[in-house]
Length: 68
Image 1 (tube, rainbow, N blue to C red):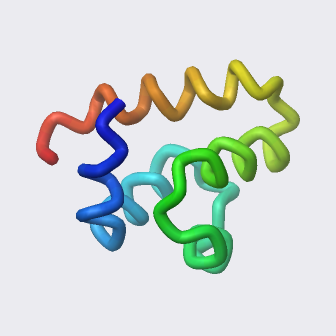
Image 2: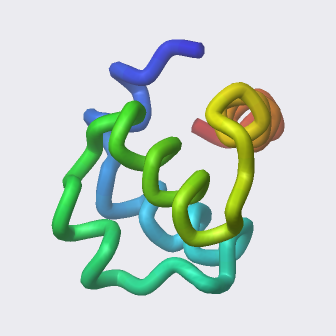
């Protein structure tokens, strides 16, 4: 994953992240900013997923973001 693209377009990606993981709040996203590891950790915590599953979900989500 080229997380640099996410970091460079963080404001736009926040909306897409919110669409994918509805339990996320914008406060959570602002809290950890554009750091991939913290996004994975929050998803893992919020949804009760194993770390590798959270990482896979973020990677899978990112791979579907063709328009960036």
